[in-house]
Image 1 (cartoon, helix red, strand yellow):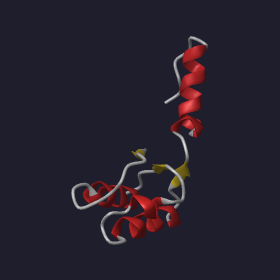
Image 2 (cartoon, one colour; image 1 turned 180 degrees about the vertical axis):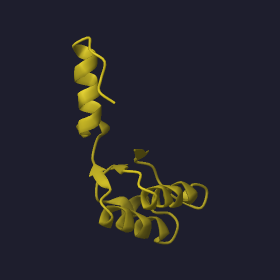
Image 3 (tube, helix red, strand yellow; image 1 turned 90 degrees about the horizontal axis):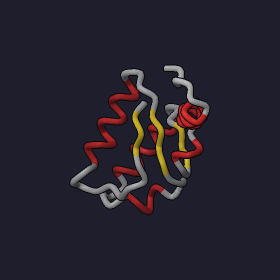
Image 4 (cartoon, helix red, strand yellow; image 1 turned 60 degrees about the vertical axis):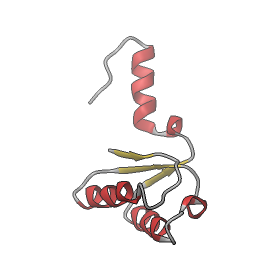
Length: 87
């Protein structure tokens, strides 16, 4: 899994989204944190928004909060019960 946090994207970090897109093409699953207002975090002339649209079209998961991600919930539940989480 690749988790993309809810941060603004501009010239200095657009490469992170490009890497996520490449990882997705290679089979990695992508989790995008934040809401659907990703265009408000795009400070690179629409490039970041376009990458978000592509990631979502290719089955990236869009979550408002990391706590809502099911694999994380499984790990937290297993830890609370004193068990090792499944890998």
